[in-house]
Length: 305
Image (cartoon, rainbow, N blue to C red; front, side, top):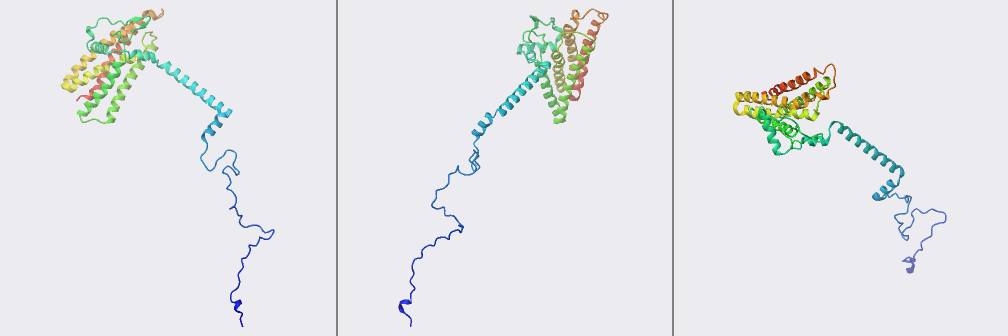
């Protein structure tokens, strides 16, 4: 018979057995421990791999490095030397103060100069005035060469050429660019030929490179007038304006260069070729004047049809 008291097995709470000595723990109970601080670990030497780097500390360490300071000082010294060298080379070929002189103009000077360029026969005094061995600025002397009128005339000529090509249905950026580059190259060639002629013939004069660019650039004023007359009055008006502007420009060039080239006889040393020097000066002046109508016709004839 079964004991009724044995129907239910008595359950007693079992105590948790301690692990046997010497057996390693599979998992370590860390619930009762505090979380380690962020700075603990193997990377306590200033490197923070978990967050963004401290840029202030990095830059301070960089500037505190003597090698970095020496490299920066050396680089800045090289940059300063390069800047001085570039400024020196630019100053050899182009003086800023001298360039400012050729743009020292006002509206009164521009009006007088344009009248002289178109009607030079009425102008009497062609001598350039000086003050303490320095020529007066164009705004104080109408006979002084300038670069303002040639520059503005060149830009106006390009715009007028674009308009003329557009009226003839021949406009394109390539054609306009070719027209502008051709006009600029002709002036450069003319100035280089003039400088080479003066050098080879050992002719001393007061002409500078800027002076030659100015006198060569005055032709753009006559070119503008020629193209305008051609657009307004056709081919007949073009040739009449070409003849007038060419004669006026040749007269202006001869009278202006006469004061710069032909009048400086005292600067040449006495020698066997002293009697030929005035003749060479005259040849250079006349050749420069005669060359102007050829360039004007070459640069304007294709714009008028």
